[in-house]
Image (cartoon, rainbow, N blue to C red; front, side, top):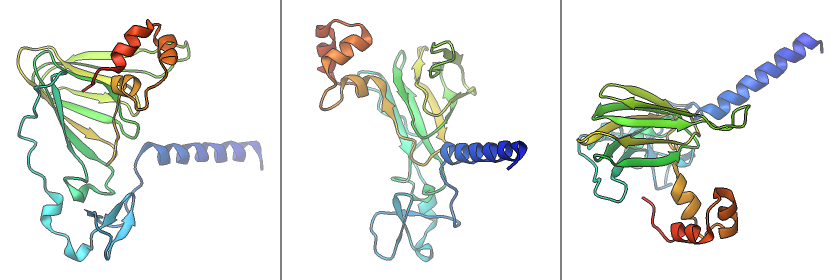
Length: 224
């Protein structure tokens, strides 16, 4: 195999590997409405498929994103998710949605989605939002953050830690779309200090350069 053919082959392999990683697989039928019981169903992508002859228009319809989420909690935010659990017709289509409500001066705490890029659209209020890169060539982690107003759109790349805070005096609302039907969510503080069984105090003391008593105090808290 000549060097040019080898280079082309390696490039194709890299691209196909990236595409396979970057998005959910394409569906092989018009739809695969999710169903929990396995009778007369086919197991696809983690969920059974409803018999297509039994599918109804209601399987593709969801109501409720007009209703504000309850933000009366310690962080002042609420996320209402639209996934295959409450909209079965999303199954295998490679996307999901969420409404994000944040009370004045509240925050949707730092977190990341291991399987999806997020596209956030501000519907009401003023957000300060941003994401942090993974390790750059210089070894640093760069913050990309911006004040967002009604109608603004912001992207959080797949797998990167990000946040939204309401810096206004009125409730803020955003609608997010995800490039996976199951984006997953890892809340940074809860994962680090709320893991069960807990991460070793020695590990966290060294990692965060904190006193052991502070680490134990953080591990005793409940993170929203």
